[in-house]
Amino acid sequence: MSQDVVTRFAPSPTGYLHIGGARTALFNWLYARGRGGKFLLRIEDTDRARSTQAATDAILKGLSWLGLDHDGEVVSQAARADRHAEVAREMLAAGHAFKCFSTQEEIEAFRETARAEGHSTLFRSPWRDADPATHPDAPYVIRLKAPQEGETVIPDAVQGNVKIGNDQLDDMILLRSDGTPVYMLAVVVDDHDMGVTHVIRGDDHLNNAARQMQIYLAMGWPVPVYAHIPLIHGPDGKKLSKRHGAVGLEEYQVMGYPSAGMRNYLARLGWSHCDDEVFSDEDAKAWFDLDGIGRSPARLDFKKLDNISGQQIARAEDAALLHEIDAFLEAAEKNPLTERQRDGLARAMYCLKDRAKTLLELLEKAHFVLAEPYPVPDEKAQKALDPVSQGILSELTPQLHNASWSRDALEAVATAVAEAHGLKFGKLAGPLRAALAGRTTCPSVFDMMLVLGRDETIARLERAASGES
Image 1 (tube, one colour):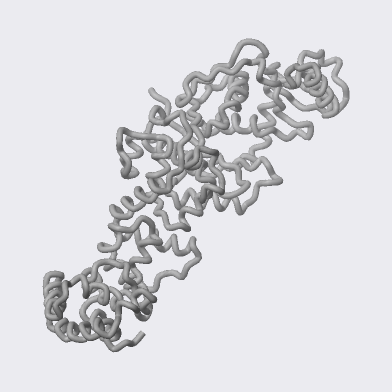
Image 2 (cartoon, helix red, strand yellow):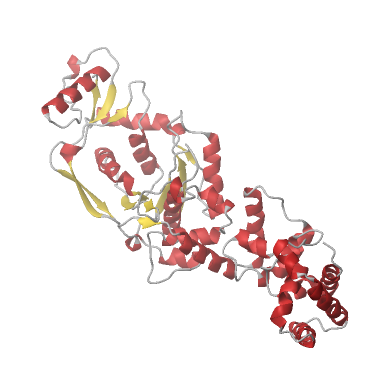
C-alpha cells in the first residue's frame, strides 16, 4: 500500500510573502492535492527577534488570496522547542551527538589558525571523542556527530543525485548552550512528526539537505523525497529583487492580477506540461509532477503574466470575478462598489472581461457603469463633443425613443443618422463614446447602450448634446 503524500510550506514570518515563496507553496499544494494528499502549513518562527505577527498574518492572507488551502492547524515551530530539544538529547544518549565545551574564542582561534595554514575552517571540536570523565562543569552545546569520510548522496527529484563530500560537513550544533534548539534540527523534527513525505523547496536549501539527512539517519527515521526547485530570476537573468518590480505576492493583488491568473502563471514559472500555457486548477492538479520542473532558474516575464491573466479573466465566471474585484478594491484601499455599481458591472461583464489583462484594466473599461451619478468627459472625450457632433447627437436621440433595443436595431438607427450627414458610422462612434462613457477607450457603443438601457442612454446623449458637463 502506497504512502499518502504529505507536503508542507514552511515560511519564516520576517517579512512579506515573496513571489518565490508563493510559487513554492503552490508547487507543494498542487503535488498534494493532485494525489489526494495533505498540504500542511508551518510557520518557522524560531528567530524570535525577527519574527512578527504582522508577517505571519501577511503570509496567511497571501496564501488565502492565492487560493491555497491547507490541512489542519497552522504549526508554530517555536512552540515545539521542547520536542526539538528532546530529540537532541536522544541523539546524545545514542552516541550520535556529543557535548562540546569549546568557547567562542577557542572556535575563532581554531579558524584563524586554519586560515593561516590554508586548511578548511570547518570547526573540528576536540570534544567529539572525549571521555565523559574529562567533561568540565561548564556550559556546553550539543553537536551532531557527522560522518567525516565518504560522501552523502541526496536523491533529488529535480536535481538528480547530488553528492556532497562528508569532509565538507561540520559537526553542526543541535542545541545551544542555553538549551534552545537550532533551526536545522527543528526542521527535521517537525517534518518527521508532521509525516511530511515530500520536501519541495528552493534550491538554496540544497546544502542543508545533506546536513539534515544526518539527523534522519541517526534517528532511524525515513528520509523524505527531496525536490529542490531553482530560484526565480528577473528578466535580465539576475536574482530577483525589487529593481525588477514587484517581489511580494500582495503587490500583485494590488496591481489587479486575479488569483487564477497568478496560480496559472506561477505554475508555469519553472514547470511545464507539453505546450500548455493556460489551464484550470483541476488540470494543474492532474498534470503537476516533479519531473516537469526544470533545473534552470525561471525568469519573471510580465508580458506572459499579463497574457495569462487576461485569458483567465476572460474564462472566469462573472460572479467569481465580482468577488475577486471586491477583494482587489479592499487590498488596494479603494472604495467598495455601491449596489448600483455592482449591478451595472454584473450586466456589463460580458463586454468587459474579454479584453482586460488585469482587474484594474477591467474597472477602467467599466467606467461607463461605475461613474456616479454619470461620467464626466475627460479632455480627449470633450474634444470629440464639438458643436457639429452635438448637433448629430441631438438628431439621433429622438429616434432612439422608439427603436427596438437590440444591437441590430440600434446599429441601423445610428448608421442611418451618420449617413444622412454624409458620414460613416466610425465618425459618429467617437462622440457617442464620449457621451456615454466620458472616455474614448471603452467597450463598443452598442454594448454600452444595451448595458445602460434606453432611459440612461438617452439621458446621457441629451446631456452631451446640450453641452452639459
